[in-house]
Length: 167
Image (cartoon, rainbow, N blue to C red; front, top):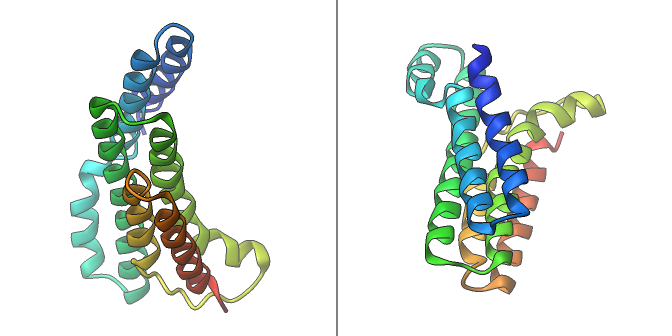
């Protein structure tokens, strides 16, 4: 990975945090740019090629690759949702949920079935299922419309995630 790809997101994040004391709109805009630059840094634009390679590989590699691409796509959609909510002037709580239930949540969900079984020393059945991501994204979208329903869908997504690592 080229250093510039690493430093651009960090610089945007620092600028965003610095701008927060002066302008919430500037901070949110820089934060959104930081989150978008993350996808450039990880080479998200190369994921279609990765999927093509995975199709001719082992079933496990194909399944893991699809799961990783779906997780990053969920995170990417959540950043687009965040940008939309910034433009329309959504309440702060909706913006916070876009970030935590969307971008950060997708990354937690992405790494959980890959890391937790290894850390706990359990044999994972490798159930790389799209349901946790779909439900997580739905919960983030519903947050602006119905917080209670959003939390119910979030609970369902956590249950689906736990089933992906169940031995």
